[in-house]
Every structure is written in C-alpha cells, then in structure tokens.
Image (cartoon, rainbow over all chains, first blue to last red; front, side, top):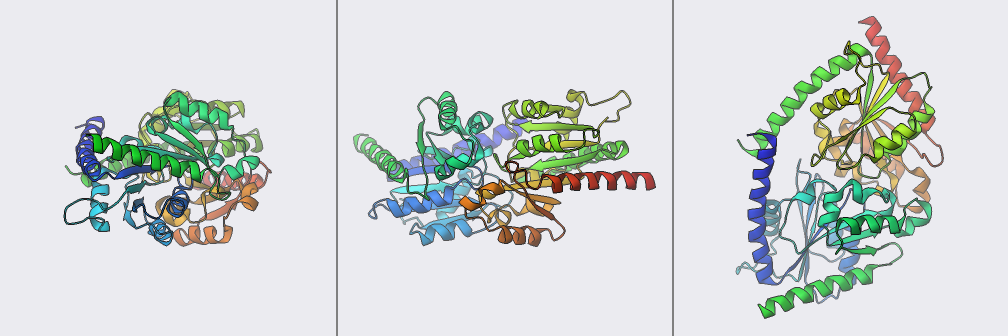
Length: 230
Length: 230
C-alpha cells in the first residue's frame, strides 16, 4: 500500500466516524464549531471572549486539541467554558476519533447519549494544513488569520480557507503596525469560497465580538429550526 | 499495519534518504539550514534579508516548500537568492525525498554531483508540528517564533523547539503592542534545548540580522574546518 492509498483509507475511516458524530450532534441540536488557525492566531483568546460574551443561558463546551500541554483548557475553564483538553502527542490535527474520545472523557455525556450542550467548540491543533482534510462532524469550520501573518496566507493555504464557512481576521488592533491589506485578504478568501463570511475582530479592543456572537446565535437558531421542521 | 507502525516506517525511510543527502552536503562543504515556523512568522522575509546581508561572494541557494503557490521563491529570487519552489500539494512538511527532488529540479547540480553552493536554505512548509520529525540532512534546524504568536509556544510545540539549534524571535518591532515576555519564551526554549542559541530579530528595523549572518558565517567556517581536518 503506497502513501496516497494509505492516506485515502485514513480519510475514509475518518469520514465514517465523522458521519456518526454529525448524526449525534444533529439529534441533540448541538451547534458544533471547528476552530482552526496557525499557532498563536488567537483561537483560545477568541473562545475565552466568546464564553464571556454569549448569553449565560447557552450551554457551552469545548474540546481542545493540543500537542503537549493543558494550558488552553485551563484558560477556557477560567472563562467559564467547560473544556476538555486532548493532548494529541504527535498528531498535528484533530480527527473524528479524537473528538469522539474527547467528548466521552469530558463527561459532557448524559446516560441518554445526548450532549447537554447548545454549542460545542472544537479548538483544533495550531496548523493551517492538515485540519483541512478532517471532517469532525462540525456544522462549520472557522479559520482565524491573524493580521500579523500577512494577507497572502489564504492563497498559500487554500484548502482550509476554501472549507471555512467563516474566516476571521484577528488582532486587527495591530493593523497600524503591520503590512496587511484587509481587502486583498478578503478577496483571496472569497475567491476560494464565495459564500464565506469574513469578519474582522480584535479581542484586545473588543471589536467584532458582537458580530461573531450574533452569527453563532443565528447558526444555532437555524439549526434548531431545521430540526423542528424535520 | 497500524498507524504507528506505518508512521515509523515512513520516518525510517526518510532517515535513510536524509543520510544520503547529509553525506552529499558534507562532501560538498555546503552548510544546510532548515528554516521552520508557523505560517506568517517571517521565514521568507528573513531569507530575503539574509540574501541581501550576506557577503556577495557566498553562493546561496534555497529550496522552498509550499502547499500551493510559487510566491516565496519569486520573492527570494528577487532578493538575489537562486530558489526553487516545491509545491507539496497536501504534504504539510518537507521530507528528504522532496528536498532531493527539489535540488535536482533546481539545477543546482553540476555534472560531478557537487552542489556549487556555500549555503543551502530549506524553507519548510509553515507548520510547527510535523517538520520536527523529518531529518532533511541539514546541519541545523532554525525555528522562528513571531512575538505576535505568544511566549507560551515553545512548551506548546516542544519537539520543534527542542530540535532547533537556533530559535529566532521575529518581528520584535511589534513587542510594544503585544504581550510577549521575551525572557519567559527564552527560558522555555532553553529548558527544551539547553544548547540552543536564541536570537531576537526585526527585519523591519534591521535588528539582529548582523548577529544572524555572523552565526551563519561561523557555522560555515566551522563546517569547512572540520572538512579540512577530516
């Protein structure tokens, strides 16, 4: 079996596990958001701010993938979001099996196998490459691009931006100090995925959080409506 | 064959190819530098500045790994560094075979199979995870960490910082605007690799380039001296 064939089998197995996860998430009416970016683009910071900004009536949870440390889940728990860290060891991305195991370990489960959550965030490993290939049963992939990384990144890492329903340019408070052309970056994202939503956000300045949270609420309402109709 | 076993075989095959590359680089007295970082930490920008700052008598070359575009090699050629881009497709890291192929395609080769170069840079794919596992026959791995990414990154991506002989904190011009504790980051790097050299650098302000270029020259001189003695 060569490398391409091996990779195809891995991805097929993942897709099968992701289908099971998606059915389960759909039955429970849980909105699932896979958050992807390079290391240090602000995934944990965004999720901390999200936990603080969303209505407290919403039941939130997070499964966090990290190579080696528990630091991110500690930060999210401190922000009031029940979180479970998966230390992936060598793995440079979350896969559906890791998510499934993470949910069990987190104790989100009720005996009836329904997640008692409204929104489940999956904070992926810091990597713009491999997470693009792995379906985690999510409703939407959200890709963060810090303005310090440069506006050329969507075309350089096209798969993840093409698959992201939402792209968020983060750390916009640093725009005065870096060469980042927001319109050029936005054009690249929309060329790769014409239906993508593109947001600008700075946690430091509190900008864009409201828009992001409104979008989450809208997606959750839409999912619940679909469920009620079905 | 399970996933762990498969991965072990891939890495063993890579190590064998890397040994062949290393012998060839050593015979030719070529200093080989593998440059690794997250997307957008400034690999290409550093190499552009390096090409402009090193003595013009030095023969430089670069093999650039990228998922999808040719943009980096174009920038390096414009800075005077002969460069060949390998578009890796899905691969999230360079491996020894890709480097070997890249060298052939680049036409660095003379009929005698000796690379007519003093320093060969390998600009890896933007990724802090997988490049740590792949020996490319290099003399040194250099890991860049942009100060915008946060000082917690060495412990979060320990393998690549442990394996880097040199870690460079880049974009230090942005230090006044971000929460990056240089000493804390340095301590983490040195805890992972006590013999690592840690540099601070800003291409925008022209800081640290001289120290970096002096270090390259020193490594090249050291390699040539070893060769003369052997």
